[in-house]
Structure formats: structure tokens, C-alpha cells
Image 1 (cartoon, one colour):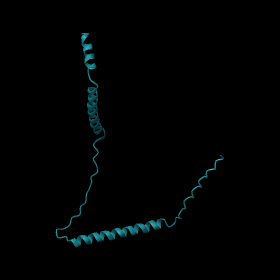
Image 2 (tube, rainbow, N blue to C red; image 1 turned 120 degrees about the horizontal axis):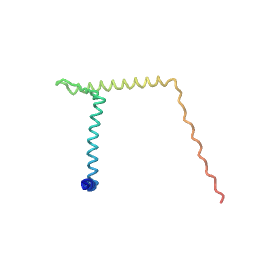
Image 3 (cartoon, rainbow, N blue to C red; image 1 turned 180 degrees about the vertical axis):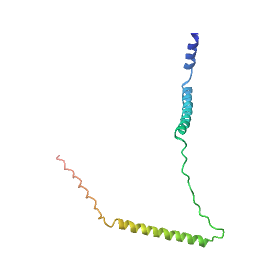
Image 4 (cartoon, rainbow, N blue to C red; image 1 turned 30 degrees about the horizontal axis):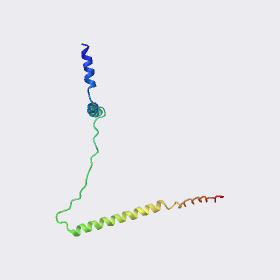
Length: 115
């Protein structure tokens, strides 16, 4: 019976460091997966928000000129939106006076050395 604990000690002492590292990594992976199952059980499943994608569909008889007309309309609307944004920005800043940045301090001139 006294031979059994010594045998266990010998077997544990014979385990290489790489085997200990492998066992630690394996047990850590199992622990992480088990903790994720536990967290889902405690907090429930958080369903992500759906992502909607919009694709414009055109009829089969759409011509090149139709596409150019749509692009021109989109360009015109974009320029109109930019003009309105600039106008609103100018109105918002109308009451403010521009602030002059402070003048930089003069750099000290080195004194001539008395040699």
C-alpha cells in the first residue's frame, strides 16, 4: 500500500511541461465554452438587430439615357441638399464673431556668451 502513493508521485513527476501546457489549454477551452453556455442560461439569447438592404430594381427596357437621367437627378438633389446645408450653417454662425488666434509669444533670444 505504501508503494501506491509513490507510484502516483512518480507518474505525475514524469509528465513533461509541454503535456501540462496542452492540458491547461484543453481545460481552458472547455471552461470558456461552459461559461458561455452558463452566461446564455443566465442572461438569455440576445437576438441581433436585423440588417435591411435595399436594392433598386429597374425594368428590362431601361435605356442608357434613363440611367443618365436618374444620375443627373441624383446629382441635382445632392447639390440642392449641399446648398441648403451651407445656408443653414451660415444662418447658425451669423451671430458669432470670428475669434482671432492669440499671437505667438516671442522666442527668447540667446544671450551672447562672454568669452
